[in-house]
Length: 355
Image (cartoon, rainbow, N blue to C red; front, side):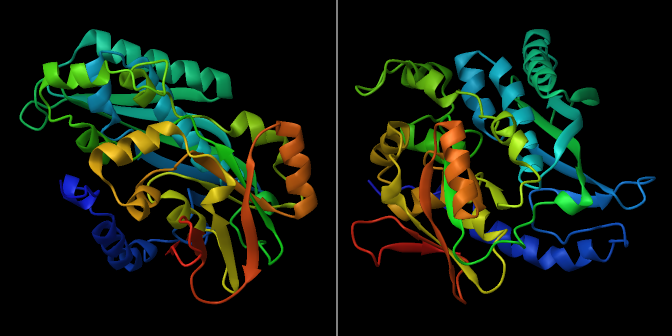
């Protein structure tokens, strides 16, 4: 069997990054003086009107991706609504912002009342827990665009942060320590590759039988493991925002540890990470074995058990880890030019992934 990759399943990360780089200049031509940070962070940062320059709004937009296809086969959708809200809140958190309000976009060929009600139940539950208002949305019925039974769910969340507390990685310096916080599994990324690896082809009966399998290392079927909701890190880190020892944060989504951390590392610094510093959850090993996926590809696509990263002064990180009672010291920040992030993932020190 040929080794699977994200590109072979139809998701070409390299091409996507190249396209985004080409359109960046056109996008930046729309920027006004109220845009406070360049493209590339986990949210767009804009001066809040009427705040005399004291506050900034941070906005993010995303979808749940093809995790929806797993939910369709399993027949459970409430967690998908939670996924979308938590993913969005984590993106705002990475910029130091608290969520204010959220809007969703639901599109399908023909409306299924039960599915929509489950999704809204999940979104409202997650928003309530965060103190975030779900102020509206759009429900679109688009036969001819979506196949029967399929749907898509996307959302936009806006948050607020004092301008002097925006977290963008610019304060990261050599000697800082990198703390990784555990994920709940795949979260909302890599499902096209995961489904292909597990042999899910779109045949409902066959796909259902795959999801009903209980791996020897697990006490739950694959369906439940794959649909574990995206973890929200806002409750864990809320009290730490504004701390002088906090220098940068990264939400580990598509692109894995390397690409997401690289978004916040300033020039002249390099984050070096050793994958041997944490235990990778078995679900990732199951996906890798079944699809014979190269290890570098696994780290490029999945979070591999680390859902959020905090970078800061050693004393701050030690205190945070003690207070949370969880997390791993993944590595440190060094003074170096060239790659912003180096991840060592093999037994040999020269087995690296860089960005």
